[in-house]
Length: 147
Image 1 (cartoon, helix red, strand yellow):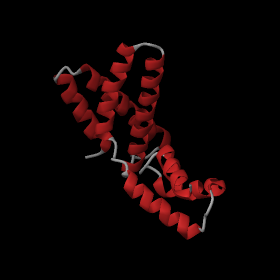
Image 2: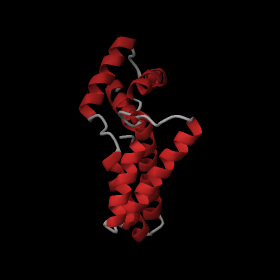
Image 3: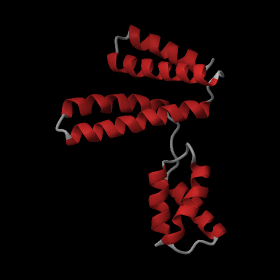
Image 4: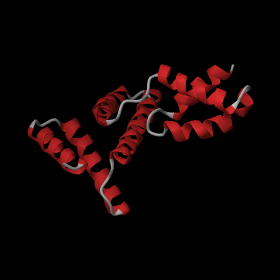
């Protein structure tokens, strides 16, 4: 079963259950997948779907932050509910311990000794961590290890 078919089945279930938030989120994902497949003229892969989901998660996190700053807890709460649903579809990220182990290995392998070389290190690390961990987390851990 393709990702799109699976999403459509879950959407149908959410509509039958009259779960408005889940229906809204699943419609958004179905639309994003269809747009991707039309644009790329191919069926979406697991990695590409995960990238779409993570992009949506990041958008929700930013919206929650903005609504909280704007003193709109009602809208922030809606975004939080959508975020929880989106997280069900995302592949889990690596733990901090796993990231730290890989980063320290790369630091030794590349012979990096100061935080001045973090740009060169991050370029290599982000190729390895693509889809597995956010750049902010990797950078924070790399900076901590280089201190």
